[in-house]
Length: 155
Image (cartoon, rainbow, N blue to C red):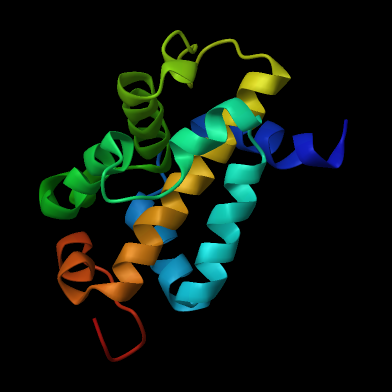
């Protein structure tokens, strides 16, 4: 197995375990661990994992329908109160299917996936997690909706 395959394979091999992992905890960890510049660099790294034909559709912009759909989570405290890591992964793949032609016919995240599909779905999950975290670092009201803290004392 190539090194690039390890994290995605581990993620999908542990699918049943991560079904119970609260997703907002993942975001909170990113918010506490990274700063804006580090997250932007990590976002670019994740985008670079895709072929050039889809990279342009994954660039973060205010006009991107893909990121607009993901941004709807910034208003949904109910989703954040129950969402698991697998819920987030499925949601992000669904957003990609709705907005990026490359993903239109992609298999379900919990289906029988090829290594390439595992890698790309995991990368998409990572990219979206970083996007959410980047916004949460920048905006207190998003942290409040997610119900996370930026540090020990501050939301």
